[in-house]
Length: 472
Image 1 (cartoon, rainbow, N blue to C red):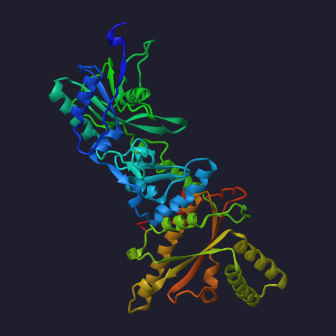
Image 2: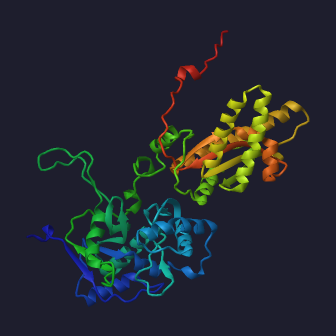
Image 3: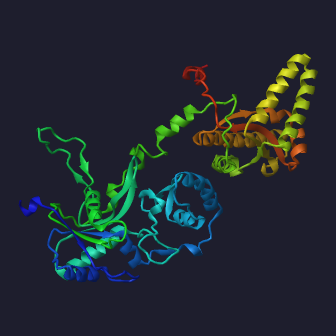
């Protein structure tokens, strides 16, 4: 077998413990000498992220972190799920560290999946508690792994005059698969991908879409020697892999664009799916408990809705099951009964309607009241402009209500928008002791659904788009 047909993976042992400010090229050269290896042109050095982070001082003392309210909420949410799966519980301080290192929190279940500030999608923002020694400390991903790889490559070339490549690796989990594998997070001297498009396969067919993630493959191969526990082999030399040396490379070229990533929640198709899937739910709810924290998350999302003058006039009151809600609904039904009597309805029809309304508002796990706070609405001297300003307020809270319904849908919760508060404003304000400026506008029943609601027919576009005749 020729050397070109053979790939060697050689781990460097007896690497000293890395401290902040250590000059890694010199440490690598010393390790090569101790292990009896001479660097050659075309070698690839794979370096564990941990020693890069340690040399950069990317270490954090978790015990000195003050967790935010958001970190504490996330911790409360994920702890029961972690316990049920026999996984370790996360400290709110660690959750805060993860949030600090993340651009976006993509998913929080039994584990936190985040997008780091580099653009990597991984668990816990790549924060690692292993192989650091001091209890209570963690390593953070390097701020610029490409830059670190470049410095090491150039430093080694100055010492050895050899043309090599450097890969910085970390172990990441994978979607749909159990087990972490070595993954490249920084590169220098080698292109992250190998484009095979246009080449022929064994049968002469031209490859149309094949792009190989070569640096990830190399990092995964190196991890077989590095290990994950007490092996203590953070440096690996790969020799014999035939690659094209390149001066300017970046790990960013291997990151999939959000727009073509089918598995990111933020895709256009998924948004459209949520919009079309949502239904007004007027059926019975499941007995499954709804966590109040989830309701608060949805309301927080609803606060990003557009509003006139950015006034954010919406005010939400969350009503769980209990005496206060029962008293409120009974008082509202008293008024409904009086109104229906004045309209000339029969006692029988009134009883049916009142009971139906009462049950819907009392049986839902949560009842959310939406109010318009008119204290920030602009006041005008003429009645018409003041009335229009009030309408702007109504439009604003309606947009927030829409955001709320969509947020609830994304959390797998069923909901329905009721306008009953419009007809009992005074009663609601008295029972709940609301501020004078609060104007009750809507109720939302919320809970986990028991059944699926059939989609109603939608009018054709020609029925809802009016085209004015400019010649009329």
